[in-house]
Length: 322
Ligand code: FDP
Image 1 (cartoon, rainbow, N blue to C red):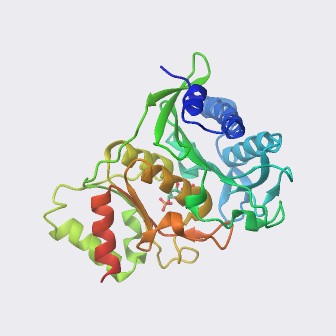
Image 2: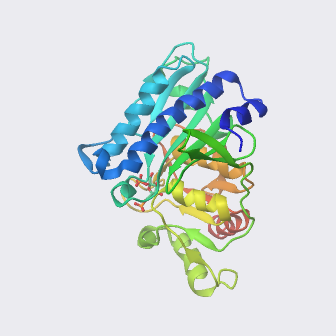
């Protein structure tokens, strides 16, 4: 089996970027170890604080953020950092070539139930036309991403990564502590009848979204054998879609704070959209390609609909041409 670094070299990835990915993965190995220790590591449960999004911070959210942030700030190629757990941009090195955004711990509600959780990250080129520590560094569409990935802390720890080429999957080998290539090219099947959506939000959805799911559940022949799978961790649900097809949806809804969606464009929707596209799937937001949205805010939320081309097109044509 092949190790990560030779694969990245063979893919022609820039040496500085390879080193940066290694930095992120060093932090991920420490998080994977603590997660595997669970209660024994004293990392379960909540802190007394809320993050910038007004969500209760879990101990592991804080620990993961601290670990990744500190390791990234030691890397001279990093000009600025954005994190779900940081209100503002964190300044790095003024001459660094890259900016990095990350969600240190996705799927927080799964931490205390021994469920799937993950770290999502993305790397962009630093902008020369704005201050090195300005939030405008991150005002770049997702198509500019040089690299995107997630680490899924599940029964085994997996790294799913694209550096502009195919979406590849690596498994953390605990015997030597490195990531080994276990799937050279992930491919999202074109069609599938599996939906990942929090159906309990039905009452808050727009009328057209409700009407679409009325069809899926009660009338459509195409989706007669459909099923719903909801992990409550985007990394886990998107990993299932990447592995065997399906559609993941988190539409906007009427609840306060969710009017433009729940998931964050910069460090959730964009990296996962790149991985889906590089595996032959489709990633959209309000009917348009997510990767082309120009971000206006570091913590901007967007509706997310991604996965197999067939069901994504079906949803968008029903809801946006209605
Ligand atoms: P969480 O808030 O637990 O970190 O990032 C947001 C997210 O999880 C996604 O990972 C997940 O898909 C979604 O929110 C879960 O939302 P619900 O609470 O509506 O299930």
